[in-house]
Each structure stands twice: as C-alpha cells, then as structure tokens.
Length: 447
Ligand code: DLL
Image 1 (cartoon, helix red, strand yellow):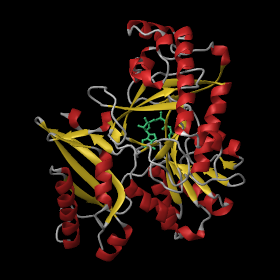
Image 2 (image 1 turned 180 degrees about the vertical axis):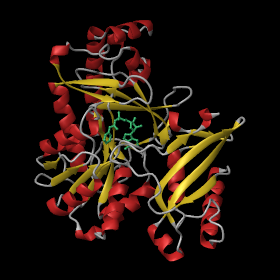
Image 3 (image 1 turned 30 degrees about the vertical axis):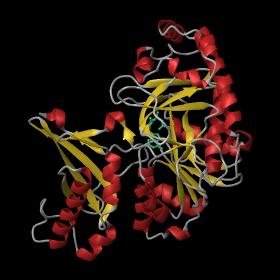
Image 4 (image 1 turned 90 degrees about the vertical axis):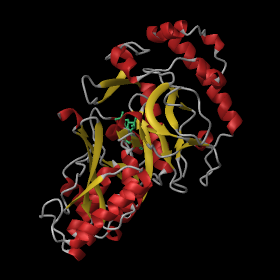
C-alpha cells in the first residue's frame, strides 16, 4: 500500500513545480531568519529572488557538517527555542555531538515520511512493528516509532540490546515487521539459529534496515536468517532522521527519495560539480519544508547515484542506489581505494565465510596494510571441524588454509591489492549489540 499516493506518484512535471515553489519559499525563509544563511547568500552574491526553482540550485551555497559544529548547538535554528518540541543528536566520533531540532510541524513531517517508508517496505495498518532501533538521542528509534503509529501499526519499542529477550519477544508477540540496523539483523539471525528456531517458525515478513552501510550481499543472509523480505531505509539526523528515502518491497531496486521534502543532487566529490543520473558522487540534500533546521545543499558525504527509471511499484519518486560508502570511510590501501562495503560484497561470494567481519588497517612505514578478519560460517565449521584454536595458520588444518587462500585470491582479483585474511571461529567475529557497527579498526595512528 502507499501512505501518500498523491505525493508518491506525482508526475515529473507536477513534482518539479512543487519543488520549485518550495525551494523559493525555503530560500526566502532562511534568508529572513537564519543569519548564517543571510551572510552566506550575500557573500555568494545571491538574492532570494534570483532562485526561481531547482534549475538555479547550484547558485546556492553548500552547507557542511562543520557549519553545524561551528554553530553548536542552536546557531542555525530558524525558529525561537520556545517553538521547539524535540531535539535529537548524532554522536560524532570526536568532540561535541551534532544537535538537531524539530518544531511540531517538523515532527509531523518526520512521522509522515517514516510512515511512507514503512508502507513502502510492506508494512500495513494493524501490523506489529518490533522496533529494535535505539530510542533516545539517536533518531532511529523514536523516528520509526512515530511513523509506525501514524500508519496505524502497533509498536513494540524494544530498542537495541538484550538479544536473548528480543528473540523471546519475537517468538511470543509475533510481529510482522522488524526495524533495526542490518548488522543487528545478523546478530538476531545468528541468535535465532543458535536457539534452533527456524525462520519459517517466526512471524516476521518485512524488515527495514539502515543507519549504516550494507550491501545486496547481506540482504540474502537477512532474508534467509529472519524469513523476511528486507528493504533499505536511509536518512540522517541533519535532514530529519530515517525516512529520507526507502526501498519499495516490490522492486528492492534503489530507495525512493521523499523528494517533495528533500531535494537530492549528486555532486563530484572533488570538484563539487553536478553529476548526471547514473553517476556515483556525493549525495547533497536540500530540505524543502523543514521549519526548525532548514538546510540548503547539505553535503552528506554519502556516495550513491540516482535513477529516474520507472519503478515496478508505480511510485514516481526518484531512487538512489545503496550507499557505496562515505567519502570519509574510504581506505587507501597501497594507493588503491577500498570501501568496506566492497569487501563485504566480495566476502559474501566466498562459500564458507559468514557475514561477520572486520577490517584492520595498519601502517608499515608509509604504506597502509589491510587485514580482513572474517568469521567462518556455522555450516563450514561443522563440516570441517574448524575450531580456530590454532594460531593464524591453523597449522595442519587443510580446509582452513584453502579457505583463506580462496578468500585472499578473490579479494586480490577484484580490489587489485593484496589483503591478508584471518579466519575467526564461529562467534568470534564482531556483532552489533543494536547500534551501528563499526567494521574498521584503524591502527595507523598507533605507531
Ligand atoms: O542513521 C538515521 C537512520 C536511522 C537511518 C535508522 C536509517 C534507519 P545518523 O545517525 O545521523 O542518522 O547517521 C546518518 O548514517 O549519513 C549515512 O552515512 C549512514 N546511513 C544511514 N542510513 C544508511 C543506509 C541515521 N541505509 C548516516 N545505508 C548517513 C548506508 C546509511 N548508510
């Protein structure tokens, strides 16, 4: 079903007219209310009246995360504090978090775009959502909660962690839909398998995963492990939270962007020049309807491409491909660019490996080295008797030597650079406890 077909199926010209009007409004709005934007527009030599529509968007200044940081916490707000109804924050790796804020209308928008997303993913009114996204400052938990209630679902606000209890709740309450990070979906799938619960025996049918990069390769594991048809949901706190875009369960071929509210552009990561549909670049988003924290041309850092090909679901909303990575998590290993998501896809093609892996980057003098530590699959360990107790070479255990070599050859063939592979016994790979899982251990600073 569709939550707002009148917007989700707008013909291209009507969508463009709506975006043009909303862009003119938001530019006038920020020029009037946000000193930061008034100055930026002035130094770019742009009058709000110069912007007639999205065709003129490249004249507007880019906004970056550092701008939010420099005006921490509330310097970019367009409304008085008393009009705020909620704040969220995303944890930075260093220093202060990025704080974002919502008016009552912003919260209404948040609920509508997440309700749309849930419906795209297969959810219907009357179904139950097991919401294992973290509740709190993170936008995932409360964001999807609001959308599920708006859609008319029954929400189990379980949040992250306590995996054993989550499995019990899934078995006993019988939810049809689950939302969590893709890495946590794998943790849950392993926990179900360990309990001997078959995916067919549980009630789940649909799953929404996002908040961290994942790949089509993991989709197979999650579909099979949870007995679902899972979809990708994308978003970021600065723009609203989850619900910037979501895949439809019909096609699962790119996430439909809620482009009546968030206008997307793809820019060249180095030159900042606009790129055509189909080309990979940085996703840059302009909020068209937000009140508290409207952002012009926000540089997400996420690498993807757009497609406007017709979709099987009938929605006309432009689609974005799965995020290939962030500009800042790309590794340069001996001069070769490597995204963790590429490694994930390649490992999934090697029979005998599990989806639980981490990348360890070290520096030997001036060169970066990459080691992939990957847990073997339960089935492979059972047939080969691999316990992983031996040292790195698993001396004398021929199947593991062969598996390591196969994995290294496959990575080398595609990445074009040598990568060391270490096999981990079942259970020893990294597992998400509910939140975002960091797969990269960077030891380059360590000396
Ligand atoms: O992660 C919002 C969210 C919550 C999205 C629940 C989906 C589900 P932040 O914590 O601000 O917000 O992190 C935003 O996470 O710029 C991407 O780098 C990454 N990200 C989010 N969704 C995806 C996805 C939430 N589906 C940052 N695929 C973004 C890949 C994603 N990366």
